[in-house]
Picture 1 (cartoon, rainbow, N blue to C red):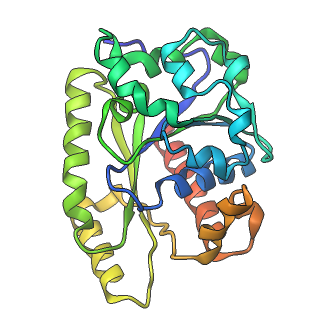
Picture 2: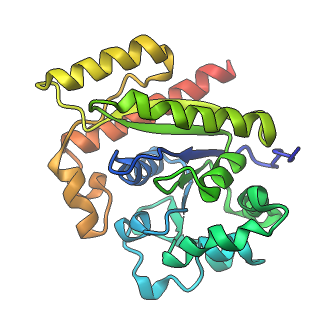
Length: 269
């Protein structure tokens, strides 16, 4: 069983949902930016071969010489691979399409499920003085997502407010249970955050009601609205919090960050 101890208490959260288009990367970028705005030191690990989180934070392809691929399969020091962003207190380990071949290369590795866990616990990471590591997982339950869950303390699940949303959640929960039983007994669900929520839409309200009835306190009070600014911001290579600080989406992610911090503080009491 892996050792989860660190000299500094850095919280590692995997942002995961095997379904694409649910606001996973948007949540990772903007929650990270909101936590950084609160004075937390945040590292975003882009574990999606599409590299959208890297693009959304302004890391150009030509600046991605060392990526999460190298973090997993190489012996790379953090100061070589962690890049600053234009957001204070927010850094990133970027990704490229090279990561898509990791599935094949990891198959023969005996420690294939623990590579990210071990990489993030290099003593050199302590020097970064991180409060949070947010892992943007690919939209599938493959070896990369399993690596994220083995490395993480908890899983945050963006859940789109649409029909069949809860049915798709059961497979993810099953994977979390399997990882908990086999590799990371301390793994827990950080919470479910409803995304693309439209209060005028009866379906959104029904999904919310069903989620809160079935998952109760796991569902964050904060809901992320359907907001055009959230969609536009990545094309300007910045979080929505910088692109339009007063937009409904930006306000919601600030509220989510505050709720996350408040939950943690209540758990420590």
